[in-house]
Figure 1 (tube, rainbow, N blue to C red):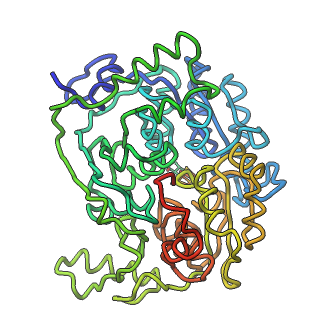
Figure 2: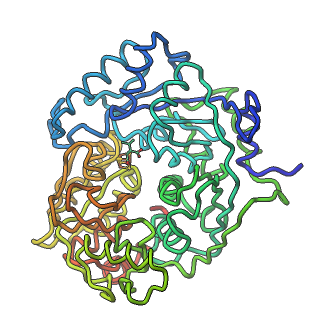
Figure 3: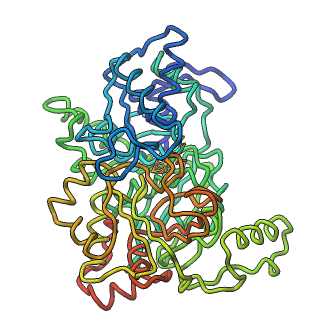
Length: 480
Ligand SMILES: CC(C)[C@H](C(=O)O)[C@@H](O)C(=O)O
Ligand code: SF4
């Protein structure tokens, strides 16, 4: 029988069918971080259980750590040092691989796991973090879990999972000039709602997906959870194989040949049925920005903030009204041109080397508006070193950006870093809930190109204006 990619991976990892749509799934790799992983490890210790396969478990420090240069164990989170200490102690006692604060490979979990070859096509990977779905960009079956599930997975290498339904989202045609993977996913969520993927494992397909570089596929799958999907996944292809080859934990020798042969079978069979299908015409995608406090409050940059008075549904009217209040926006206002106070380039969505290269190329020769505080946070120390070797840090600092050490930073208030109450931020991150970037901070999600263009003018700005004038050679090739 024809199977979807998801069904193939599910079946390959099924240890036992538990009935009622549940299965015991074999977990190949587990990733932890100091915010939630420390809780799972401590609880495992308290229950006098141990990690079953130490070589398959990896842990990083990303959420609570400072990203200020020379940070050490310092953190702005009042009890943050306790999480850091507990993680270090437990990870070392458990004998798992820890990317500690000063480790040369430290970084955000979902940035270092592809970078190190920990996430591989066809593997199951879990982490007590909702953005684990990022790794679907490599063809891994990866999803976020809770701390107690993480404890179970650590002790047994298995998890009881309710089988999700399957959805295919097909992106047809070529991605227009100035648009990126971030605009694709914001467009999808804007059109189909933040709950549109609820209950589904979503496979992204189509010409525009095939043309995306791996880092762009990671960006797209990163936000599958903002679509409420169980996970997002993209079938591995030659682009994937070329990306994985030679990475620290990638197979070598005969095992590499076997792995490649297996990966080449990892695709949805012709004729396989999905429970739901969505087709997006890429010609309809424009640089997309959120105006409100949900990722579904996303719209083309040149469009208008909606007017609650035009809404027939009472719930929509009320939530839009509330979002406009928090964001201090007027109904009907054009998104393009809203004045900003800050620009943030970072997070597991958009802080990889290709993001930084594209951003640096756009900002080179410009300075950011004097009213804007700009911060760039590389996703890992490897990304940081690579960027510095290419002189990108200098381009950012010359333009007026701060250049930080790696971590989640201002994506999330967990570590206490924030631009402050009432500040309006154009941000390459993935969540824009009230208070996400700190109490009272207002977030507008966008691509790295839109973040840079807006930082330069001090207003939400269409990157195509700058790309067309200054960088005619820099055609969008979907690499971001
Ligand atoms: C702290 C962590 C559990 C959380 C997540 O699950 O995603 C965080 O990474 C986030 O992005 O909100
Ligand atoms: S960078 Fe942001 S979204 Fe990603 S794991 Fe960290 S806090 Fe979560």
